[in-house]
Length: 546
Image 1 (cartoon, rainbow, N blue to C red):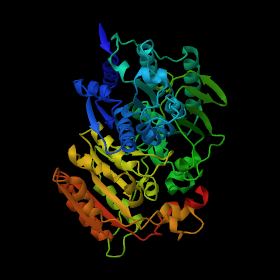
Image 2 (image 1 turned 60 degrees about the horizontal axis):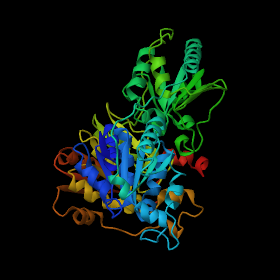
Image 3 (image 1 turned 60 degrees about the vertical axis):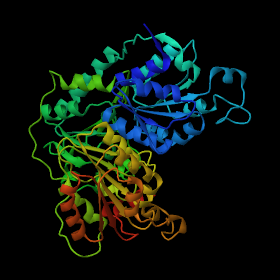
């Protein structure tokens, strides 16, 4: 049976569970958008700009598994590229689709709008080749095969991909048969790697798993929790992997802050005689400035499609198949059950003194419920935020590697659209918030009811920490009345509540009210701290991250 190219492309996306597609319209992508709105399984989400659309698709993919963003040629593509680059940096599978001018214009190299005066129709595809796993420029001859190839790459590597679709090619008819995606490990390498890992765990007295973001991208949360429960293995997660493990699990010892962790964590961490890394990235911010460094105990490194054991690399060993093999091993012997370890924050006394950053998260920890989705922006709050204890079935997402300020606000919108059953909780700084605050409008439009915590510390405090002179003028920002922003972006489409807090007592009172308010509408809590109020964990780590 025959189908239009654009209809087939959207059908393939719907088959991956992408039911909401973000972007902006433009005259080169109208045919693609027609396919989105005409497909009964997909919804079109107009964002306020292309960058926000890419961020929203990123947040959506972190929860749903895959995301998609559609823009017009040239101007829209370049506006979205930072969001796609961030997704590429952190293995977030987002497909970027560009509606481009018709084939006749491309062949004749005629100058049309959104191009250069000396036309280059492939310039933007070449740019995207640097921030995607693969790209494709569709023609009548290659449309079917290229869509299938790009989708297979998308599924296999869990990274962004790019498709340029000319206006006229959208209506070209192709076969609608969807090929099977066959992605398998090398069986010999898989078996050898699994046997070696089992042997090492059995021989170890105190093995420790360090898990991280790749386990999220390959949707292995359930398998990982089952694995540590079945074999009684201690586990910690890097900051990017927070939320992978049920934090009430007796085998979880807290997020890996290395030497900056609490005493009980450090004793267990330093006393382990075997460390196994499951999808782990040892980058600067993910290790709080390299305070976590691999040593001779780090003998197993499991990545997306290869594993290194004692320096030997096993190629084409897929992380999901290795996880399944280990989980179902008949040779792996369970360890003795461990006592649970305290992690997270202890209760703090509230007062009428000026609010401190280190008072915020202990209070919010008590406010959290099961089934929350917590989104944390890059900046001062990301450091203490990583130590908060999550309730069961919660998500925690942050952009620790790419660290593009402004990401979290639209990403929280995308994450909320991906799973409407979870309560979205956004933590952002006022400097980051100003970059992408427009997406509040879509939260109201689509009935999203997040709890938004905005840390107002009079500028870029994280940059003040890192710069030579904290008072440099470039770390100042313009002052906004954020309460009025809620009115500006709402236009009576949804109910909202605003709280201004300057003490821990006021924050506690606001949280008590929020429990009921968030059932009716968006809750916005603006928290005021001094511009040089730095969380304790950053004070201890700042010399390492400069």
